[in-house]
Amino acid sequence: MNEIARLEFCDYISAARDGYEPVSGGQYSSLAVESWRGIFHKEREVIDRDDIMEAHLFRHACKVFDSQKKISPEDFEAILEAGRLSPSSFGFEPWRFLVVQDMQMRQRLLPLVWGAQRILPTASHFVVILARKGDSMRYDSDYIMHMMRDVHRLSEESAKMRREKFEKFQREDFRLLDSERALFDWSCKQCYIALANMMSTASMLGIDSCAVEGFVGDEIESMAPELFGYDSREFGVAVMVAFGYRIEAPKPKTRQKMEDIVEWYPQR
Ligand SMILES: Cc1cc2nc3c(=O)[nH]c(=O)nc-3n(C[C@H](O)[C@H](O)[C@H](O)COP(=O)(O)O)c2cc1C
Figure 1 (cartoon, rainbow, N blue to C red):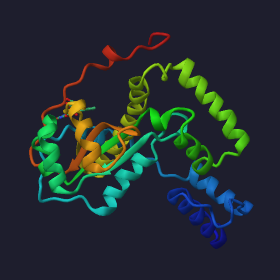
Figure 2: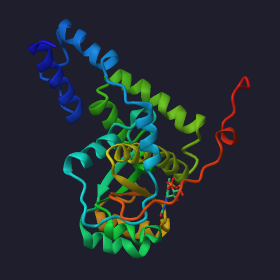
Figure 3: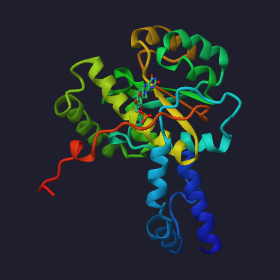
């Protein structure tokens, strides 16, 4: 890649990462575009299949971490980035990631999180994943408008058309407007995609994790908004996830056989 193409490429990538307008206003030379095509499509190094499977086998629900070992800022940034880059319905990113490094805050969560009694005090990093609720996820909310205008950069006309499509999707196709719960659960589903991507990324980096759903929703809902300072009309807790380094050997994996969970059409 020549120097101009490289600079433009860096600008493009930084803009995409940091969410600002590229310096060139999005107009790049054909040379640059040609070079990027190589990066995006054919020149990317493929990760070895065995290495990928090894990472999936390495990941296990880590019930206690080595409290002396901390994840490097660079590795943790990559885990967060995997969450941020996760796909979401219509690209509306119905999540927020609260990184709880304050041990007093973790202490306050402890009595409510029965599924993380040894996890909370020992994890290097602990993340509470919030999902957006009706106030911010309805097709007519300010947040959805903000996403279409400021993040997706749609014109007024395109935003209007997309909003109509989104309204039909929410109201009729998925009946998400039938109850507050339906909309919240739909947001939560998407948060679990980010959760999985973050745990897989951690595992590829040799970092252990554990998803945490072991809490009573109502109890968390009555305490977390005040503890973390978010609006309970806008967000609710979807799931939590801990990261760190194992101190105990994992239990052997138990899984159903492939043929018991996969069906092929036509049959193989
Ligand atoms: C959404 C979700 C929530 C979970 N919640 C907890 C939890 O609160 N506490 C816990 O110790 N493990 C929790 N787990 C871990 C599961 O029990 C574990 O993933 C499962 O038994 C399979 O074991 P493996 O992950 O070691 O392969 C959770 C897993 C998922 C995916």
